[in-house]
Image (cartoon, helix red, strand yellow):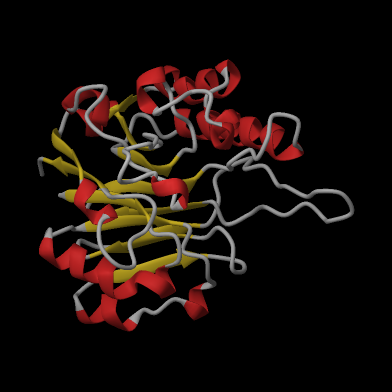
Length: 262
């Protein structure tokens, strides 16, 4: 099975590009983040015509996650146990559309979009830490089954995962607390597969649109694939598809692709 994860940064703006990539690279399952639409708004026809089933979870024009699969799609869940809610000021707290689980080809796949954090003094940063802590607890219960936790984790785990740790746009991605929170997935029984197959400085997975970040290679490695032990044992290869950041209409993230033995 070939599994990919990709923060597409608005599926309505990039559906043709995404479907073209799926077909060209023979992707069996794609987990998407930041679809930025509700399920009713998602342009499903191109995926269906290409032979993919779709599950999506979105509440408005922000956030949103989806999974498309050509190897089956069942038992869909739109949040994990104890997933935290967020509300700021007078806003009511809402469990945002940041997690979607489905069983595809015998593998439990979770498409995850971890909160950005915005700033270390912002309530969104505490929310980010709560989200990662709750994910760790939920994931521990799934660790004995073939399970993939994939997506945009909004954490650069090491200094080698970001062009400059002092980048003011990434203050919430490099703190010791957030790095420790992400590493908790290893304690829960998961292995981050890109570390196993790619050198630490292989490439980034995100480059901001601003200030020529991509031509200057001023990016971050924040999109990952964590696998439970039964699934990690089947991993064959991991690729970061840097070329998908090029050209007209590109997302600011690129796909991370993992091949598993059947």
